[in-house]
Every structure is written in structure tokens, then in C-alpha cells.
Image 1 (tube, rainbow, N blue to C red):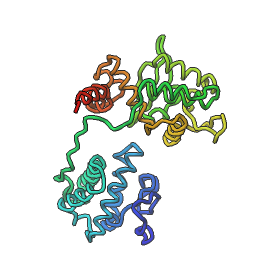
Image 2 (image 1 turned 135 degrees about the vertical axis):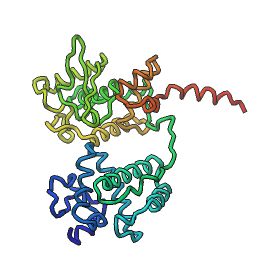
Image 3 (image 1 turned 90 degrees about the vertical axis):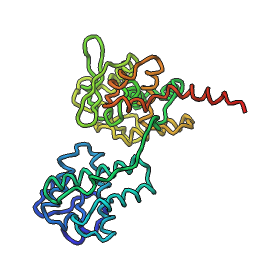
Image 4 (image 1 turned 60 degrees about the horizontal axis):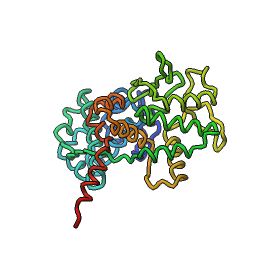
Length: 338
């Protein structure tokens, strides 16, 4: 690798030429850190293969890359010139220092990325052992999620504020409805195609495209069905099953492009509509997932079914979205009559 490429900041995301490594294998342009490049072509190739072959989700890939690149840059700053020089003591010192500047979940994510990379390098014979294997991250126990949620009245007020006399308004209302009634992540919703809203018997179903290529199917709530039907009819999407269901708007016009909507555009739309309504709660796309799950549990739904509907691997994850105890807690606090 050239000196120019070695001088790149580890935050750079662009193709760095590595001898013998095809451009398509370079994990979508991730720069090989100098300490890895110095270990030889097999090490550089193994480094890129880790991101290209073991991590399918693009956001996870970038997050893990930034984590390991930051650690390797730290190693170079502390005069650890070779991968073989990195020991558990160094990893532990780095993780401890990271904890002074970042929250525990991010520190745990960084350690997981470092551990996985070095395990991959060790299994490929690049290093003798994984120096991160014996290092423990900070304990982090969460019983209540931090995602802001809306009450039923706030949610209805937001939806009612959307001008559905326009195509963009119908589009945005349908988008919010899928996130709420299907307990869906925004990434899974914007990845949906027209064919992912489909008839199954007498009911219509939705199929958000979840992380890892999973397709999670569930019946559409009757209000969700009405909102999506109205949007699809207005947008004339019925005959184009393979096209994107939710699309980006042409600037401030009332027309939609053929391109799928990006997550950041969905977030900006939510923030814009919340601010126009004067909402004090700083909501985001994930708010609607939390709102839907809480609304379901408040009306007698079971945690087990909520877990299945939200496609969570663990009921503990679903429990983080359960805010049904908030009012009870407030009532008990008000008993303090001092």
C-alpha cells in the first residue's frame, strides 16, 4: 500500500489499493490500516474478508469497521508496530479508556468488533491467538428502553396533522402506520416492495424486510390496510409488484420518484412533522415501534406474542419497549406527601 493510502484517516471510507486484492473484495472500499498492511498481503486480505464475508448488514459493517480502525490507530499511537505485539493488557487498557468518553453499550460494541476481528485473524493463521478473548467489557443491564414513545392521543394527533390530500401525505401516513402496527424497524419498512403488501385469504398482510435478509410476515391491522390501500391507489403502484413501496419525494413537490426512500429521509420527515406540530418529545422512526408495542401490551396483549410480532430473538428485548408500568410508577411516587 502506498504511503499516501497509509496516511489516510481511519475514518475514511474509500477504496485503498491492496496488492492482490480485487476491488470488489475490498469490503466496499474500507481502508486497510497500516498495522495490518505491514503484516503482509495475507493479513490485508484476511482483514478485508472479515468485513466482506462475515457481516452482511451494511450499517453493522461500517460500525465494526470504525470500531476496529479506531483501536488499531490507538495501537499505532502507542508504538505497537505489529499485530503480534498486541496483548490482552493493551485491549483491556483501550476498553477502559474508551469507557471515559462513551456510553457502555458503545464500549461493548467496540469490544465485540475487536474480539471478532482478532478471532478471524487467529483462525486464519495471521496471529497466534486472539488478544481480546479474555477481556471483559463493562456490565450493562437495561430494564427500560430509552426510545421516546407517544401516547395514543399524541400518535393520533400526529397522523391527523398530515395533509392526506396530497400523494406525499398519503405516503408518509402509510409509512408511519406500517412502523406502528407492524412493530417494524424503519430499515425493514423502506426496504419493502409493493409485493410485500399482499392478500392472504380474506386479509392483507405486510412483509417488512428485516435485518439479515429475514422476511417477517404478519396480518395488516384494519387501519394499516386502509392507509396503505389509499396510498397505493393514489400512487398507482398496483401493477408494479417489484418496485419500491415507499419512495423518495421530488424535493418539495407533491410527486414521488422511483427510488426507494432512505432511512435518513424518513427520520427527517418525522422530525419535520413533529416540530410543525410543536411536539416537545424528540421522536424518531423507532418511536413508532415502541408506541405500537406499548399500545398492544396496554390493551391486554401478551409479551410472548409481542415478541413474535416484533421479530425479536429474546423477550428481554421486547420488554424494553414495554412502558405500561410508567403510570403506575408515577402514581406511587405521588403518594409521597412530604
